[in-house]
Image 1 (cartoon, helix red, strand yellow):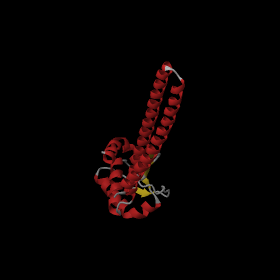
Image 2 (tube, helix red, strand yellow):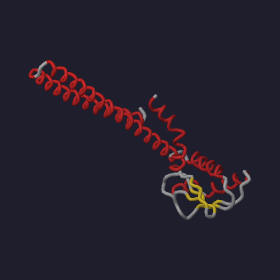
Image 3 (cartoon, rainbow, N blue to C red):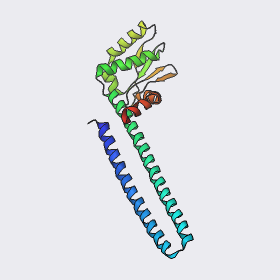
Image 4 (tube, rainbow, N blue to C red):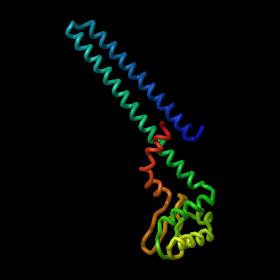
Length: 199
């Protein structure tokens, strides 16, 4: 069973328990209303019977509507939480790719950025160690083959361990950090994630 499935099962179990508790509370409240209505009926005449019946039915409908509204809100909150967790796991999976795959991912992203001239590459300390100077030389060779001039050097500044990079070319910065990239593609992917989790 996957981590997402366990989380999903746990959240759904909690939601079912909450819904059951609320339904029992609503039924108890409805029972008290019905009992009260029955007492009033014994004291009232035929006109009062009709008014009590209307009031009882209305209260039961309102209780039912409130319960269904709460269930819908809980279901939406659970779905949103599961989608958030799926994107967090995707980000974590990118950070834990094997070194060669991670290096190729960053190189592909940097080649797509397509800047010209010398640049500073800001990455986390761990990524700088993970990638190494030889990777920068290979990146510049691939950039030159694509018709892009300039040399790339690691910056003295470092990013937090969030993955990705920032390229500085003069006064211009290109933000390719994983949180920024994922937030940019999230709207296009979210429907597919929802479908994968809930269909």
